[in-house]
Length: 349
Image (cartoon, rainbow, N blue to C red; front, side, top):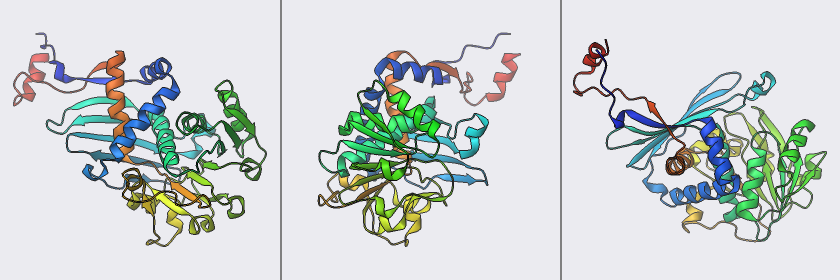
C-alpha cells in the first residue's frame, strides 16, 4: 500500500545555507541590510506587543547554547544559537544558528531557516539602526575592533545606513584584519588596518567592538574614548563576557535592547543593577531622547534579542518565497484523519 501524498500544509518552506547565499547574491548585501533594518525598526516601534524574555541559555566551560523565543500574538519565532569561541581553532564557526517562524492560530510552522548568515545580517542591521538614532551627526569614520566573522557585515551596514566611508581595523590576530581588509576591498570603503586599538580609534566618531573571547576583557579603555563618540558594543553577549572599561559606561548614556537580558549578558553586567539605561525602542518611538548633545558619549550595549530574529525571519519568509528559493520540507505529520496518527504508520506499510 502506498501512503497518500501529504497535503500542502505538511510541507514547510526551508531556506538552506545555499538558498540564503543565492538570495544575498541576488539582492546584494547592502540591500539585504537595508531591508532587514527596516523590518527591525518596524518591529521595535511596536515593541509592547511582543512577548519578551531573556534568552534561555545552557552554559558550559567552553561556550553557550541558547534559545531565543518571541511572539507578537499572530506570529511566533525562535532561534537556536550557540557561541563557542574556541571553535575557530578546530576550523568551526564560533556562532551557528537556525530558526523557525510559525503561526500562532494553528501552531504550524511557516518557515525553517538557516540563521548563521541571517544572524550576521540582522546583528549588523540592528547596530546600524541604533547608530542612526544615537551616533553624532555627520559621522564618517568607524573603528572596528575585532575583525572576525561579524566585521564585514558591520562595516557594510554602517556604510549603507549611516554613511560611513572609512573603517579603521584592529584585531589581536593580524590574519583576521588582513581577511577583513581583503573582503572589504572594492566596496567603496576606505579601509585602514591598524596595529593597535589606540591607533584604530584615532579620528573615529563611531567605535564598534565585536570580539569573540568568552571572558571579561577590556578591549576599549576609558582614555581611548573622547567626547561625542558613539560606541557600538556588540561583542559582550553572555555572563562574564565584556569589552568596555567600566569607567566608559559610568560617563556614557547607555542604550539597550531588552534591559533584563542585557543586565545578565551585556556590558552593564559590570554596573549596579539599578544603573539607568534607555531601551532603543523608546528612542525610535520618541518616548525617550537619544543623543542629547554633541559632546555626549553614547553606548549601544547590543547583545542581540529575539525581536530582531523575528523581524529577520519575517523578512526572509517574504523574500525567499518571492525569489522561489525556499524548498518544501516534509516536516509535519498529516494524517487523513487528524485523530488517527497511528493510522499513518499502517497505511505507510
